[in-house]
Length: 398
Ligand code: PMP
Image 1 (cartoon, rainbow, N blue to C red):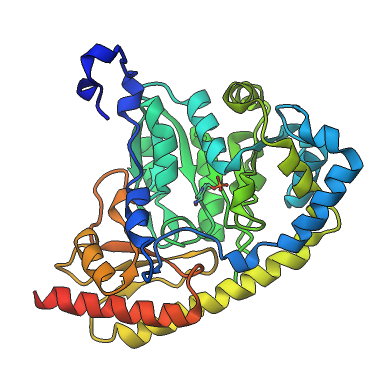
Image 2 (cartoon, rainbow, N blue to C red):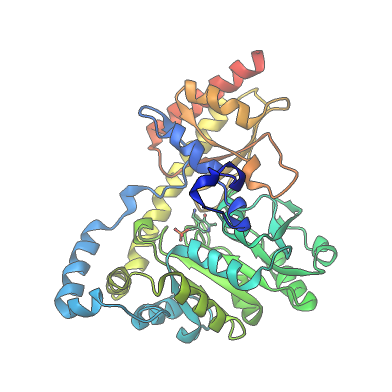
């Protein structure tokens, strides 16, 4: 609600920053797509088939049995020490557990970064397109978000020097990006780390999908190449379960204390009970057995979507990419169509997707759309892509 719309007699006055908070366009879209009978490629929901429910049941018993009072008590803002150590061990570069901060999802990492690094009007560089949830987390701090041009390989490094002046950081998802599913190549990563060093441009690397590769692991992270210049955000949402609301960040010494203070003010600490459960589940190397099963499932689902697109979109001038991991595929409608206008017609046909435009900080490509291939079953993918093709044909005939 706009502050001017508030009934004057009640005395409420909203802060200016509240004007910058908007309901996520995505959430509004998801409401429509959650109607019964709709096949949804819209949500970024991990497949519930991957949730390790039995592991958590066992872990719960052990956590409460071993030190139930500790699990239910207030705890340190940094996070549960054994979990911070497990995170440091899990990451394939040298990480000091003292630099690991456990967050309430990596979404909170984005919020803390915004609070600590953005002033009103600060320039913040993002990929084109970028994660909508990051734009939302940054928005209350009133940055001037600027999109860096990108190609299939990631951001255009040459543009960084031009955009650098006054920029507080570059927010980047090098592996299986949300929304496009694209991955930055080895050479692009090396060039980005090098350029970030030369320009003294801080990096915020968001990597919730990096472990979900299909054939080969993505190249090493930016944090591994340039640790003192990178805040790295990770998450347990896609490898264990999003309902835990647990993620982490790894921050250089220069910014860690401020992020910790922001965390303390935000929620004191992430749920200690959940942190201990995850530490317990991770203890015997569970992720090394579990994550390959997620990779295999998501790869089969991606393949099903690619095959369905090949079959159903023949002759339609539709374009799409082939993501090598993660949860999303990025597509482009034939010229003359607009994804936001197509959505209601697609929903009529029984299928939903997310239009690409809201993911652009500026100059949106209205023909783009994001398709998640992980939540719907293979049979639903077949029916859903056929329905999408039918809605495109109908729209072209109008
Ligand atoms: N970053 C990116 C790129 C995401 O796609 C998501 C989830 N959609 C998040 C952060 C937030 O994830 P969580 O808070 O569940 O860790």
